[in-house]
Image (cartoon, rainbow, N blue to C red; front, side, top):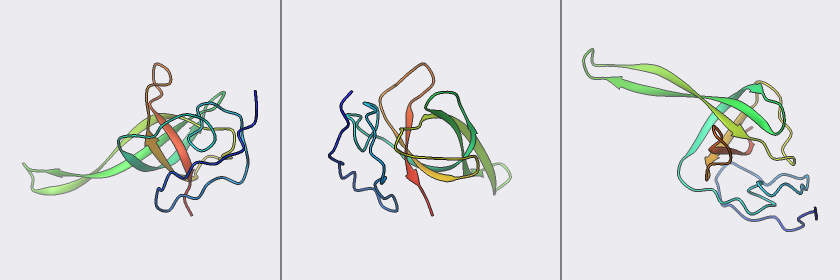
Length: 113
């Protein structure tokens, strides 16, 4: 596979393009994958086998019955491009894409500081 030399400008705040270059066709920076829909922040909980990870997204939910807020969380299986190096506990920005497999609908855009 050819190495993609051009880096697309995704114009996402707080996310810098990776310094590494990859030849992954499902990379939003070097491949042809388009990012659409929601952008979420989360924490890496588990690194999967090949190019996948589990990200936990926490958010506030307003309970109308008890008139107060509560923290909720959900976990999403995400695609990790080769150019982004992650470890468990990193804070990342993920973006919605087309379905890449049965459970993967998000891709990691980059690490947050």
